[in-house]
Length: 291
Image (tube, rainbow, N blue to C red):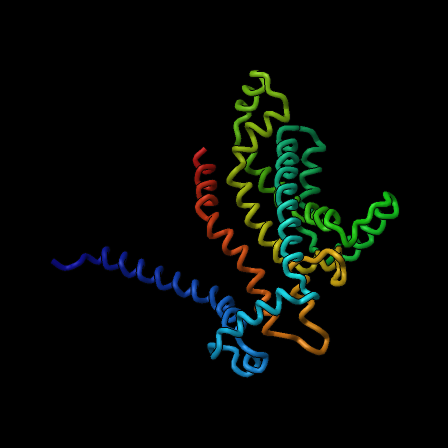
């Protein structure tokens, strides 16, 4: 019995989508492959044959050993700083943005919409426009309060909260509007206070959006270079991994083997984390979608 034209069309469409998906996989994996193979080469081999595989993979281990022993990189300290800054920034951005969005949705005043539009303006204004005003603002805050904000943990975390809040408030605001108000009113009748309503009723429902923002903001904060270099600086006492990698690129000499190896070492923790957390991320999104 011959295959019907409809089945042939479906099988051809499925084959096309599979080939297209494989092509996208190779396209997005290609830059990562270039980093891996060039991390095990000498500087001469990287410049002359960047697309060829290395002849001696032991160069990768030697580069890793040298990076861990370099004082200008201080890998373990930079790794801890990146984890601390990313973790604290993600928690504060997520919790405070959810609280702000919840209040803006439930408070029906003429000021609530204005404040929400004010948050949206933060998504429209490019970061490059506020780079110099940000540095001047930190200096002004130091002169007014006596608290040092540059080259400190709290300074860069405060900056991340400011730049990460607009998108987070926008996503939380849209999701909270779909939550029935009756649930919160029932909790208040049962004796819950406003903080209890938020943390016990609203915040668990926001889990899919919370996880999505953890992924988006986490990748941005972990890999960010421009904001830390403005707030912390290359010669500061607090260094993140991107700043440490930048120390390998001098004005006249660039150690490409060590640079690519350090980039690989900085990317691996995030890749491993999201590979293990993938099931939890998908589960959180799907569970929130059916509520």
